[in-house]
Image 1 (cartoon, one colour):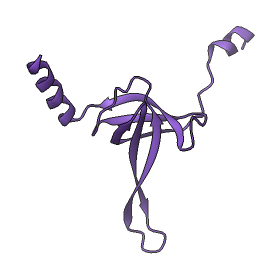
Image 2 (image 1 turned 45 degrees about the vertical axis):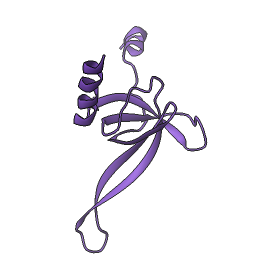
Image 3 (image 1 turned 90 degrees about the vertical axis):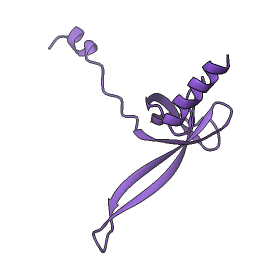
Image 4 (image 1 turned 180 degrees about the horizontal axis):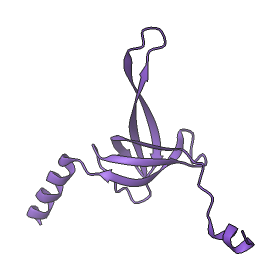
Length: 106
């Protein structure tokens, strides 16, 4: 393997990624994403759902309430914000209804 071949293969980023649902967009350039994790109970071995909220940076404020989004770990941006919006995986049906109502009004 030559040196040019080594540089062509970009190393995989080790930053953590999570997929969750937007539960709040009330802050400027910040969204709150609820990520659901399914884990086996240590004693009873039954699957238990756990939800954790993450504060993510949304530069264009493009995410809306109910959207499924992918967030990526980043440097600390504020006291609680350590994630940034990577992409919107799926728009919520509520957001689509709002878009059509807004277009009809204009």
